[in-house]
Every structure is written in C-alpha cells, then in structure tokens.
Image (tube, rainbow, N blue to C red; front, side):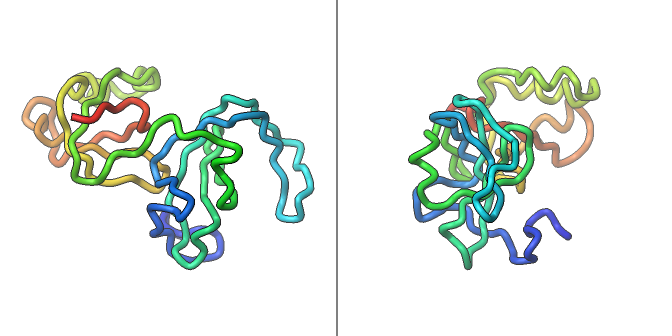
Length: 166
C-alpha cells in the first residue's frame, strides 16, 4: 500500500478540509483526548490536553473525515467538529511560498552528521515549500545547498511550527 492511501484503499489527496484545517497544520488538544474505536468505545488510550497533533491529507470522497496523526504518530480520524476539541497552533504554509526555518529541531541531533549539516545550513535562510508530505510535514527545497553538503535535490521535512513566513 502506498503512503497516499488509507486502509480502505482510497487515494488521500484532500489537502484542505471543509472545516478549514489543512494538511500540515499543527493542532493542540484543548482538553484530554480519550481515544475511542469505531463503535465509540474507549480503547484505553489517552492523550493529555495540550498534546500536539498533525493534520494529514484526507480522502476527497469523504471530506468531513479529518485525518490526523496522534502525538505518537499513529493515524486517527475526527469529524468536521475537530476545531471544537483542538486549536490550530501552526498553519501549514502554501506550496510555492518561501519560509525560514527559525530553529533547529531537537530531533535533528539523532540524524546522521551529513543530514545535521544540511539542517544547520538551512536555519535562517528562505526556502521554497515543495509539498506537504503524507505525514503532514512541510517539505522544503534545500537544493541551493547541494554543492556545500553533497548530493542532489536535497530537501528537509519539518513541522509547521518551526517555520516563519518570508
């Protein structure tokens, strides 16, 4: 199964939901979230209020089902009332716009040294937004640093809250 499909097999190409959230937006839970199954029964999983969730692309034929990644990265669905329970803390930038990576994410320290170098080089520089990937991360074109860091067509993927518009 490809990354752009959910378990039902329908393509996941919906980037903006009718309720106003967009793939790549970062949401903060307004209160504790108790995860329930398709019958509405609690699964025993719970996320604290204030936890960060990521909006990912949805299914065009089912636009009122909002697809999210829970704080642990697992997929989760919500309905069009998602903003009753979550607030947008970072909006995904438009594809084609330019943004600045304002800070180096903590998790970069766990990457290979050449990847760390690319991320460090990107901080503070305007970069074009190429896409929002299947995990809701903003993909930035970092190819202007190819000659410095090696490789071709380099890109980096980061959470929307780390970016500032140019």
